[in-house]
Image 1 (cartoon, one colour):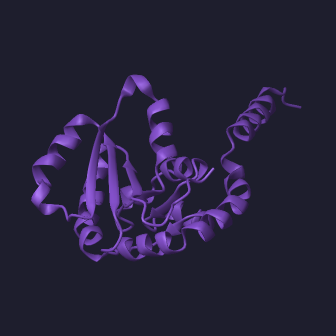
Image 2 (cartoon, helix red, strand yellow):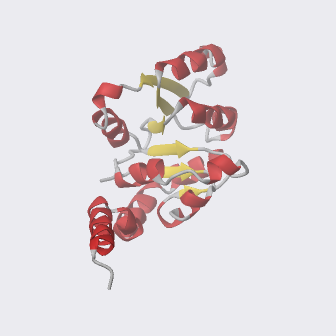
Image 3 (cartoon, helix red, strand yellow):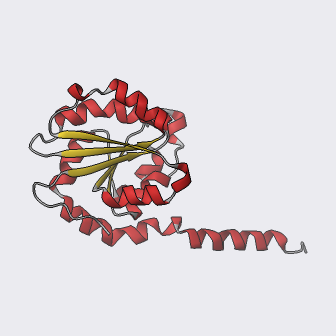
Length: 195
């Protein structure tokens, strides 16, 4: 279920992940702060390990954050997963999943964070790495995060309606029950005696 976004409400954004991916968010933050719609208010939750949040606090002191933006730094609680992640996804309107499509290591990235976002009812904005491009029918994939953010906010009800209709079909191949059945069939095939 998608969260409603009322006129004038603070837009709740979420980035979550490993601290090794935090650099991609940091790289986008200046443009997000300066180029997104200044008439809107944004809260960006960053969910990662404490060490990453500490680095971010040193880099982004409050004087570098525009008045219409706020950062909500949340420490990843390893003992409380997946409950914590689900709770953060369920309160967010939009997730940000920046990466580097030109980095060969990043182009092999899994679908996991994007799938979590889509299943939770968030509008996901993601860089065009191969695995994310595959799910472009149910997410916003591209390089210009401020422009995509403005588009997501301006078209939020329409996108929620569209994605809720397309989501099940788009994510069908990632269904855990379907994957278990495929594994069972594969194991049974390998256990059959050779003729």
